[in-house]
Length: 383
Image: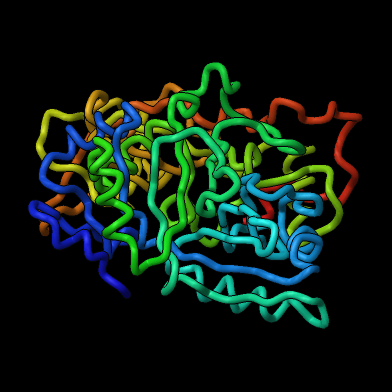
């Protein structure tokens, strides 16, 4: 793993987990968050992975094997794709942008080698060339709502929470969605010029921020992330990820049957929630902590209903997190996050904010035409 040269900056504190290799913050995470909200910060995202796909067949081929409609993707137009298992579980996710000569896929660094290897196995006799170029290219994050222009570096703009063509939503409409207030893009620069690119932005008045800031704002925006919210059972519906990463009306691809069946029938097995955590203590629960439901006696805490997938301290909201819980957990239920911090148990009360509604019905689910055909299994059988 390459360690970013920006970790040599005064005050830099290294991030851990999927963000290892870059800074968690540079000494003042609150000010860094505020600068990012104002659009006056740059974030070192050089820990992300980059896969480049070249060749004349690249777009039609990627279109045929992933969840997104890429057949006619125009240069400098960003989108997002998923690679699904035959059962519809998320295996890979990537931001996608084409520069007219190659398609660039930006993903978690730990996934880049496996994604490149899988693509290489799937190319058969097609005219495509796949390379993991993470060692050559690095990403910089900017709170800018704009695609890269002609002559500018390759840039991926995050469309979240807009419902892109062929997508659908389970959660709030864009006008009411907190993610609408979070512009975000990733600019690819040669890794050797990373320090200089940041310095040029600092000279223009921007502040260097760490991943504490990006994670806090991502959680506030209910934005799912491959390295956090996804496990080996995840289907996109549970995370409201059909907004940006799935085209429901394109041709066949691996996992499409699950996408269509759960969309048509509703009721994904689990659902994403945002948690407002009790901030009376100074410690945050660890990632992977159990999420429990209050028992019927009103005193004890009952069964495990989910897991904490992301957590951060927001500059205005305080401690917040994302969790994946069972779909049938009441939307107004009191929850408790149980964690082990430094060998001691930590209990943190949590109030949930609905991301994917408990009824598990998308905004445009087809009307039911009667009972299920005998022998047709519901979506719960996928897990």
